[in-house]
Image (tube, rainbow, N blue to C red; front, side):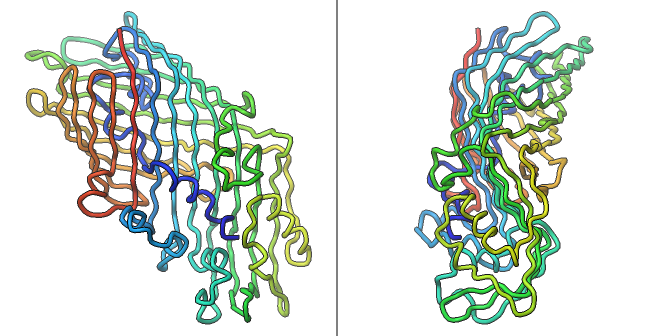
Length: 448
C-alpha cells in the first residue's frame, strides 16, 4: 500500500509547493479580482472601472514532517513522512483563477469569474500504521509488536472541481471620513473527481512475522469512496486535472463586508478592513463509477490481516477488492451511490493600515468553520499572516509573515509590477532557515 497512502504527496512534491494562496497579493493596495475572491465586498473598490483577469496560478503543500531542506537534500521521502510520534498532517492545494471580468459602476460592483481547484490531504495519519503500510517490505519496520489506539478519524483524500462565480457588491454608507460596502458571490460548482480512504477509531496490534507484517486484535470503521478519474491510478498526475467532468452539481456562497477610513488630508485610506465567510456550500458527485462504502474491520482472536497485500496497489477499486476478498474481517455496513462533499468553509478577516507615505502593514487571518476529520469534508488549515508592504501605483513589494496550523512559521516575499505579480509565502524561510512548507504563485491582470 506504499503508493496507496502516498499518492497525494508524490503528486504535489513533483511540482511547486505552498499553503496560503496568493499570500500578500490578495490584500494588495491595487484592489482587483483577487481581493474580491477574498471578500466580494471589495468589488466596489476596484482600482479601475473595468478589471480583466488573464491567468492566476497558485500551488502549495504544507506538512508537519518534511522540511524544504529534506527535499533539496534528497532524503528518503517515505521514511520521513511517517517519522516521529506525532500524527502526520499534510495539506496540498492548487488553485487556478482563469478568465474573469469585473466592473464597478456608481455604487455597484459586479464580476464573473472562473476557476479550477485541487485539494488533497493527509489528516491525522497514525505514524505507526502509515509506516507499516508503506514500508511493510522493510526488515527494519518494527522492533516488536506495536499497539495503536486512536479515537479520531484518519484520512487520505483528494478532490478536484471547477467553479464559475457570479458576484455583486454595493456601497452601503459613505461620507467624508468613512465608507462601508457589502458583497456576495454565488458559485456554480462542477465536481471533477474525488477519492477518500479513512479509518475511524482504529485499534489494533501490528506485528512482523517473518517477512509479513500482520494486523491482529483490530477494530475500525473503514471508508472507501471515489468518483471520476481518481478511482483509477492515483499516481498518474493527469487524473487530477478533471475539473469540470461532473457537470453542474453544486452551489456555494461567499459573503463579506468592507470598511474604509479615509485620509482626508493626503487622499486614499488610513485603514481598509473587511470580514468574509467563504465556501458555504457543497457539491454532489454523480459519476458512473461513483461509490462510497463503509466497512467494519473486526480482527478477532486467532485472526490476522496481512498488510503486505496492499503494497503496490495503485487503484482504489483494487483496494476495495482486497477488502471484499476478506469478508470475515471486513463487514460491509453502508453503501451510497451518489454522495455530497462539503467545501472548506472559512471565516476571514483583514486590516490594512497606512504607516507612513507609501508604507503599509496588513494583518490577515483565516479560520476554518468545519472539522477536517469528516469523510465528506474538504480540509483546510488555519492561518494568521502579517504583511509589511511598500506600495505605489505601478509597483508593490511585500513580505508575508505567517503562522500556519500545520507547518508553523513561514516568511515569504512578493512583487507586483503593474498587473503582473509573482511571489511566495515561504521562500525566505526556505532560504535562511528551513520550513515544512514551500509555495509559489504568479499571475497577470489589467484594468481600464
